[in-house]
Amino acid sequence: MIAMAGFMSAIMAIVLLFMRRYYPPSIRGVGAWAAAPLLWLVSTVLFGARGLIPDWLSLVLANQLLVLGTVTYYMGTRSFMGQPAVWRPWNWLMVGTTLVFIVLTYWMPHYALRVGFFTVVMEVIYIAQMRFMLRHGGRNFPVRLVELVLALHVAVLAARLISIVTGNAGADLMEPSLFQTLYIGAYVITVLMLSIGAVLMATDRLRTELEHLATYDSLTNTLNRRALLQRCDEELERAQRYGNGPSIMMVDLDNFKAVNDTRGHQHGDAVLVHFAECTRQVLRRADRLGRYGGEEFLVLLPDADTAAAQGVAQRIHATLSAGHPLDCEVSIGLTSWTGPHETLDAMLSRADAALYRAKNEGRNRTCVA
Image (tube, rainbow, N blue to C red):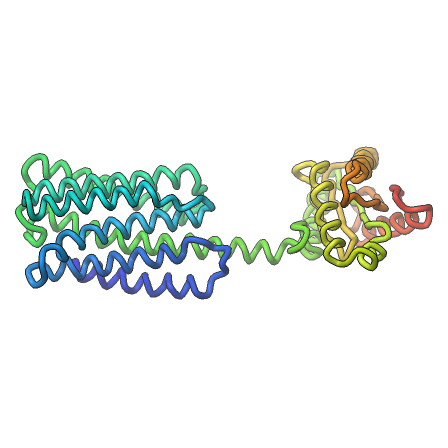
């Protein structure tokens, strides 16, 4: 069973190492997740060589590598979830546990005390990670899977601790007793499931990032044209069923080419980002802002009539004239849903015509079609 745990650790370490190499750097923590099963692998090899190598390798170092691997997995989880990997308290824990293992191996040899102490240390680490994941991990399946594995292994460790207190610890790790078999079997499953959980969490994050890249404009973090038009189609379908259709605003930054020509494209990009941030501040949660092309944006306002949409347009003009160095002027063409016969092409055509009328009338204004 120990050999099986080592084999599983080796396989999962290879999988995670390849993931670390080919996944984007924005997915953090995969390196630590790959290092953890490698440490567990070395630990199981040392445990399995008990009697063939010195006790400081097969007992002290083997236990410490197991603890270190578990802490490393926890630090990987913290990094993955956007929190700092705080090593200092765990470094002190490693120093303290090393001293205790040395004492209980050489100066006060006591198998039950050593196993009991190790069990408590592992429970502390697992509970710390489980608590962290419950607070920061979200509710997706991979996270819940790891939380379940941690909870079950904490229960197994608690049962092992009870068996030690009641005098059923045994006399040696390799003793073929029921408690030893159950614990080592649980350890094998935990090593496998924690590694699988790491793979699933990283893969789920990659899927989310790819979906975001396929849906959002990389510069302004607004919806891209394809995604925005899809949202518009969905809103019109909803309006066909329930009425109360949307309004659409086509927004164009005035004289933006001159900004690029005189101030440079980097400054122009900063203006676009500033515009998107300011516009998002005045929109409702249900509203959608997307980059239609170049310096032209589209705003979808579900369940908004012309009067409500004009109010939004006024707020956009106001927030872009607050005196910020990146403030700009915009022309807005606005149109609203006219009934069940309405089509998206017709609405876009009217909004575009209203936009050009706003530009012809002097820019920095809203026209309604």
